[in-house]
Length: 391
Image 1 (cartoon, rainbow, N blue to C red):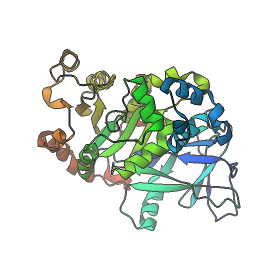
Image 2: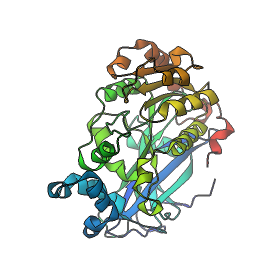
Image 3: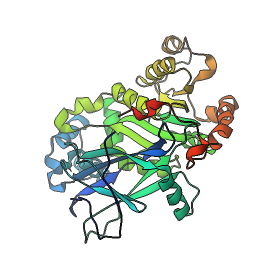
């Protein structure tokens, strides 16, 4: 793990290198923190994106012209505020080689320079007592903590990021997004593009209620999807509006410069697998509930992981988004080596709400999870060293 530059924050007398200009945007993605193997530190994932939007170039962009041709857009569609808002991040000018610093409590940390896609990502190693102080200062009994991006003098913006302190034991939900909790139509090119760029986002009915029930049992959430990072802001707004629990986001890196729109339309199971295994490495003692859909390869990926990590996967929940019969040969083949109580295919999320069997399994882990104090190094057993090998 690379060393982190750190300084005591003194209200402005000292500045680490921050080179953000007033016309540049910075988006900070929600992440998580996990305990070190010795229990003395928290590893905090900090991830952001620096870019500039260019409204004047929007209608001349190749993606805009391609969408117009493929979807047969009319003039009224072209003037759609939704279309323009969704397209802007895809045609943004990503800022490479930028340096930023963040302030967490009374400490300042320098981030590595941004990459060609405008993203910067770094893992901070912070002593447990720093978080204990922060939680007391905030007067909040919450596992979500925030930090601020340091901006040059005269920049009035407040840019804040958040991360969740997740204990070693307990339940985590790893969920897909498209056609699992948001209606996208991934297997139909026209529907996918219309739902992504022209229509208001719509959630799958009752899925937020299922996730709220799991949150009440103490579950943490990780949203792992092939959707690109350019859609994070409208997705985050949708989830907040419809009451989905806060969680970390793990989306796909995509740049038009890296390929054409066909690559955007193709799913990325390797990216999802890598993100999931990184979460597994951070939390070797937690158990997981998977949510996905039948439209692409979620069932195959989740069963593969359940076979590789049998002790970690509590249940696999697959939304039947493709109209298949529950006794379809595909499901029989995929789940043949998995016990029946470890997977379910559902048409309506209300089926899950009325099935108390697996909710009881989640409830069984709650005492163990809540018994672990997040800020006391002496109250937990050390994690497996694998949690420090994920980077």
